Image (cartoon, rainbow over all chains, first blue to last red; front, side):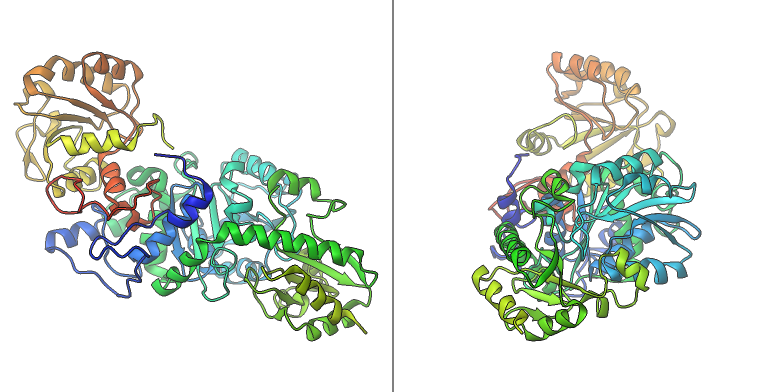
Length: 424
Length: 173
């Protein structure tokens, strides 16, 4: 069990030459189902008594390489992929929650997550309470006997807020609930949330992990450290399960039981499996994750510094800048870089921002982040449109805010593009 | 990484080297972890002898069950203790007392079973000791199979996956 370095894991973890053909690159196992050796093996597979492939909604060898690779990069015990980051969150909460239960979420979240929590999850009778990602005590104040989990983003979208993971993890531990961290913007290259006390990590692998803006994917990673039996509240994990004739997941699968339960119950029944083609594209992207993240962060810092010095710019919200209120948090949690997604406002306000978005020629105006290409968007009218005015401001997406996702192009070209787009 | 930190090469050597495993605490209840492990290891071609006083004389998964280690007949290459850490002490002493008669070379304690004193006695008696591990999980990890469940095997290997064939062997394909 060697302790491999991050770059080595990014290229190799989970992958091995194909046993049938010797193919070195992970093959795309484009198949719905897998033949059984015999009736006995089929029964044992359905009983979860042996490891093997059944049906691509449950598992697929290409997808499994992605699951293991992200688990390895995060330092977790196991991974589980889903069709999108949203689907991954759905599977996580489906495994943890029950009707009437609550969870506490940082209000500095991707707007889509706020919608998912406030609207769709309410239909399951799951209820979010809100706190401030930079203030662990604000989470503590929301803990009740119905709390089942705490959720935050390591680096929050769109404002680039660096969450106080260590402090929030302490609140979760005291409350006896798992801390779920969305590590999409940081990626394990910048922050490894398990090292700060997180218990479960979710990713929209669509973003920096895949990195090329070509595939939607989500991944769950389990840290293997949370005791699901201690409180007696996590019934899916500890009670005899009727659909697998009475097995108890935590007792049977130990430190990778959460991913087994999320796979064989939530993914089985809700169905948002990842296509093997998409898993292949994300895997290929991950091979260069550390190289790209280095470049993304260097470019982002250079662009942020240029904007900061420009008289047309009112403010720049990037914790990589020395005078940013969260600069110390950046140095603590992600010293290799403050990420590549940040916001800024023009002195000309909303009108100037809209003009700039319409005038850029290298930056693409679209609703995504974490692409090799540089991207720009106006969150208030798009990604955070469904929120109330008050919630938009709390999420860092007020009317004048422009969000950038800095790509890996030549930074001089990016700066020149912004410069011409801001010109009168 | 779970405690103790065993090299993969040691675990692989143990799993390649043993053929007959006495499983102390094997259960006939198909929802129990010991049943899962026994089913899997049988499937991989190991000979498994269940040891459980409540099942002695009967069968688990078609294998005749015995009450205690001292009732077993040679050969027994490895004893896998599927009992709690405290109970592992007396079972270890029974294994040491019978090791030459049975030919036992490996004492294995299941995942979550840790008994340092028992491990020291077994080591002093010349047994290879593995604690706090499951042979099913380790077999699945080193063969690659458990990767199909997204489990982090902590293995990087530029050779083809180990053969998954029946026969209890981790031999290369």
